[in-house]
Every structure is written in C-alpha cells, then in structure tokens.
Image (cartoon, rainbow, N blue to C red; front, side):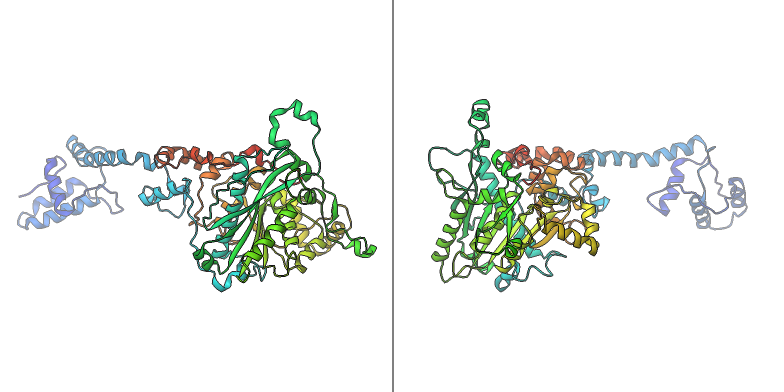
Amino acid sequence: MMQFSTTAPAHNLHKFQALRCPSFRCHSSSIKQQPISSFASSSSTQTHKPSRLHLSNLDKFLDSQKPLETSSTTTHFQHQQIQQPIQKSDAKDKKGKNFLEGLNLAKLWPEIKPGDEISPRHLKRLQRLLSKTAEYSPRNILGGKWKEYHGSNDWKGMLDPLDDNLRREVVRYGDLVQAAYQAFHADPAMSSTEPPQHRHVSLPERSYKVTKSLYATSSIGLPKWIDEVAPDLGWMTQRSSWVGYVAVCDDRREIARMGRRDIVISLRGTSTCLEWAENMRAQLVDLCDDETQTQAQAQTKPKVECGFMSLYKTKGAHVQSLSESVVEEIKRLIELYKGEELSITVTGHSLGATLALLVAEEISTCDTNVPPVAVFSFGGPRVGNKAFGEHLEKKNVKVLRVVNTQDMITRVPGIFLSEELEEKLKNSKLVSGVVDMLEENTPLGYSHVGTELRVNTKMSPYLKPDADIACCHDLEAYLHLVDGYMASNCPFRANAKRSLARLMQDQSANVKKLYTSKAKGLSVNLSRQGSSLQNLSRQGSMSMSTCLPSPSSS
C-alpha cells in the first residue's frame, strides 16, 4: 500500500520528478486542482493496481499543482535545493560577461540580436570602426564605364540609389582633399621674402604622386600695425598660402582598374584671415573681361563672386596665381602623357569647391586636346550666376556637388532661404519663377551649378540630429554621410566601412553620447593596437578653430 502526502521526504519527490524531466519547475495551471487529502485517499483504496499508475498520477499532480503558501518546511527546503544550483551558474556566467554586456551592442546596431551582443565578431567590428585604420569599400574594375562614373551622362540613374562604385570614387576624392588639409596645417606658414620650397603631401592613395603645389593669394592686405599688435597671428595674416596640389596616377594596376590615367587637382577650404575676408566680398564680377559685348549680352554674361575670383587670379610676391599655376601644369601633363587615355578631376571642399569650378572652367579650353573634366565638390557655396552654370555646361564640364541638407554654407551667398522655405518654393512653380527672376536681376543673383548628391546629418545613427554648423560643414562628416548613404528613402547602411575615429576626434561634441562613451570604454584596447584617438590627432587633423566657416563660405 502506497500513500503520499506533503510531508514526504524531499529526496523522494526529487527522485520521482527525475523520472520525468531533469529540470523541475513549478508552474500554475488552469486545471482545477484536486485536494491533497482526496488524492491520498483515492490512492490508498487502490492497493492492487501497479505502482506505475501511482507514479503517473503523482507526475500529473506535480505538473499541475501550484506551490501553496502553506507548504511545509520540507517543501520549502526542496525548492531552495533545486533553485540554488541555477543561481550559482548565473552568477558564474555574469562574472565573465559584465564588461562585454556593458557595451550593449544591440543599441549600436539594431539588427544585432540580444543573444549576439557579446559576440567577438561584433566587438571586433566596434573596434574597427573606432580605429584610425581606414577600411574602404571594394574597388571594382571600372574599365570602359569610367566615363559614366566621371559624369559623361551627368550621373543619371547612379545617385538615388547611390551606385556602390560611385560612392567609392566620391569618398576617394574626398580623402585626397583631406590630404590637402593635413599638409597645410602641418606647415601653414610661408616666407614673405623667399620662394616656397617643395611641399611633401602624404596621400592616402599610393597610386598617385604629387607633381606641383598650388598657392592662392588675396588681393587685399591687412594693415602693418596688426603684425605689431598681434605678432602671434603669423600665418593667419599672410597674403599667399598653400592651397592644394596637382597629382597624377602612375600605378599601372590602378590605371587598368580605372580605365584611364587620372589627373587630380585637390583644393582645401578656408583657413586664413584674408581668405575669410575674401569670402565676404559677395558682389558679382564678370568671369571674363570683354568690352566688345552689347548691353543685352552683358546682362546674360557669366559672373562669379568677387572674392573667389580674387583668390584665383591674384599673383603672390614669389608665387604664380592659382590660375597660371594650374594651367601651366595641366598643359605639361597633357603633353607628357600624350597618346594615353586621360581624365582630369578637380575636387575641393568649401572654398576649395568654389575654386574647383573656376579651375575646371579655365582648363577645359586651355589646350586643343584637353581630356574630360569633372568636378567633385563637397559643401561648396554658390559661385556665380545662372549664366555661369550655363557657361560650364557649354564647355562640357561635369559637376557633382555633394550637399548636406543641414549645411547652411551651401545656401550662400545670394538670397538666403531656410531649408523648409527653400523646399516649399521648389514645390511651387509660380513662386519658384519669381525667385529665379530675383536671382537673375539682383547683385546677389547666385545660382548653383551641376548635379546634386544630397545627404543629411539626421540620417547618421552616430551624429546628433541637431549638430552644429561646424559639424554639418565638416569634410569628415561629409565623407561619413556619403559612405553610409544608400538612397533618399533608405536608412544609413549597416555595412558602412569608414572609420569613426576621426569623426569622434574632430566632432566629439556632435556625436551621440552613447558612442562617445563606448569609444572611451574601448580606448585601452585601441591604444594597445596603436590605434588610439590621440595618435590620430597627431597626424595633422584639422582643429575646430580653423575649420569654423565664415558667414558667406568656409
């Protein structure tokens, strides 16, 4: 005869449960519970049934019975005995996961499942994105299609969604502009009494070599007493400054990949006081002096901003004007590589973007055998009137302007409109016509040139949506946005390649706190790998004070 009650030894109950399942847990059930006394009574009357039936009944009872608050001390002891090993195991696991779980990688990349938060693969990815070592998108062979990527068809069908090969090319040219910034800030001063020496430029593209340094000179000067009052200004007050370089691809494998030999003209943005002063001279002047034109022709004549033209055409004490220097070098390279398939790419940021248009306009007709000319510009302000844009089209100069929606520098000089108002005017044909008429018949009748690739700071998961003007205009922020851009109606791509280290360094105040805290948490590991953020800043990264734009441009 077998009888069961709540006072049964704990080890017996554990033995019965072990026959059913190795892990025992108490669950509530919607089945009507049968009193223990009734169950014991019924089992005592059936003395001749096999013990297997009693075990089955007990199994069902334990499965459906909810733990009673009035259970005996023995049952309470049993519950502790079963749960205790699980608690120990959890404590042991948490001890080894505290650091990695603190990273909370699921918030960094929503596509990561919670179970993968501490995956070494994702931790390695975070370390890579925060390292200074750049990882570029794959370089596919352009071959016979290189003219399309160079703008022969105005990049139709390649911008929204953004073609992967074109993204790679745009970022590559942006890095060449970064090299111009780094070379200038590494040694910005120029002697006022001696010609400048050859300047070394560390290019990210080893397949290119620098063939000539370029200089821009302001036509205005500061009073001499300023040097006496503020002698520490130094290079900030000099009239002539190193502004960029000419480079040519001389690597056979890269030439085969691109489908031609590429000549690059790279130009930096505003850095000196006199360059800022030139940016403020917003009146329009004729692109070319021609007194034989009639008055009607003069109204539709190409015009550009006075300050930009001054920096482009003015000669220095010991250097040629930017115009003379570029034309001379391009003619030399065309003759040197005569018979080869060539291309000329002019790239620049901010002030460099405006100078790039003036350079492209002039070199497009400087020789009888000028190769295709294209401009890749970043954060460029308006340069001239509508006739200037039409003039470039007639010369077959292709222009791809990369514009950040939140960058106000791209909406000046001229009639300044807010982002919201500008969008409304574009959608209204009547009002849009009025604005065009005002722009064409006013001293500030500026118009943009070329094809636009528009990105947005708000699309980045790393940057604050209300980032300040310096961040929205920063070149590294531009390249970060282009690298993550897929299409106007798509989120930031999850497999973006560009490192976050420089963005963290230059724009830490505009990066979301989540990521800056993770960067600090990983700084020890990164420094061991020689990839700390401090090491990056020593390699000539531009300071915030020098990249702050002026009201009219940067």
